[in-house]
Length: 120
Picture 1: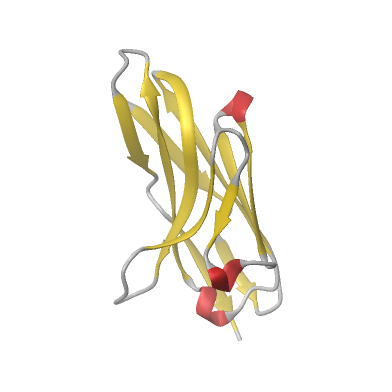
Picture 2 (picture 1 turned 180 degrees about the vertical axis):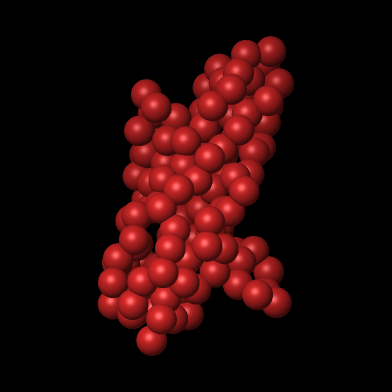
């Protein structure tokens, strides 16, 4: 089993910043891509940003220039720095990780989600 634990969500005013963290634990042999998704009420879950094991990043267009994804491979942890937050960024943010377990079985895991609320 691979578990993802997120932290860092909360309530912030428009224009403010938040930093999300997601730590993976369990029987991990290697960690490949890690990323963040978000889901607003009544909407589908969409990609926010992703980062490969080598550090290549990918962002949704509306997040470019405002959000920064990074990772600490030694800690199997991924971060999302969110600046210039807007009310439309309000959503539950989910961490996602893909890799290989020690039994050589591939895994895809999701965190439990952390609420981000941006007030106007």
